[in-house]
Length: 291
Image 1 (tube, helix red, strand yellow):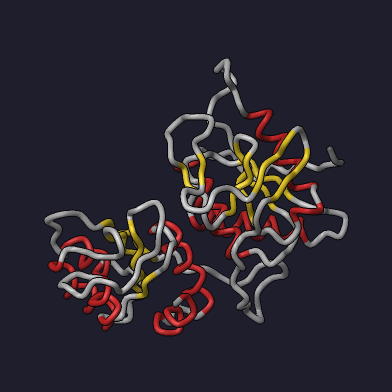
Image 2: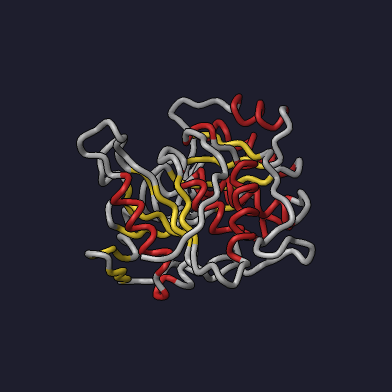
């Protein structure tokens, strides 16, 4: 397929990966991609958190060279081990000129998924990854890389003092993820704020609605300088200020929370880390950046 070089960055199970690990990986990836003799990058990764690392890299990297993340749903001891086939497909994508400008992608089961949309929808099936609303970008068909659509544009802002190849000079990791649930009290939100969170990624119901009991905590968080985003637990669709009842998206928006469109809670959390890093922790500036 192509000439290649290998670097062993780390051997971690997916659940051991942290945002700090993603940040270090982005900097190493940027260093590789800055080389004029490198046309693309393949990164092997545990599948439990591959979608989060892909999204973080897509936010951070500024290159137009293709970056393909790849994993395996079955192990070498299984008769249906998919690792070699997935790795070969990822190499085809990373080496393909047609993949330039597509940002970071996840390549699994011969399908090419954009980092912004990909999600793991099954615990172990070889077809565990999908983009539920719009489908994959394309596929690898007998070694040929075929694209059917292009991904959404990536952020354009850039720190003047950032290292070459990355968008910001730091990330802010003090961002918590809170899942809304029926009968919820405000205790999880207030605990996160008291514990020093600078951002809260709130996973709401449906269009972006939550139990009314937590709205005062959201309002207090914003007033104290905490960045709050609202995502949906649904796999597809966008949150919006459609509902005006207590706890509805309209009330959350008016309380100062940022409705994060079609981003998952995990993605909104990572976006907060990058935006807060870009603004040196200024939640109001970060909110305007990601709104």
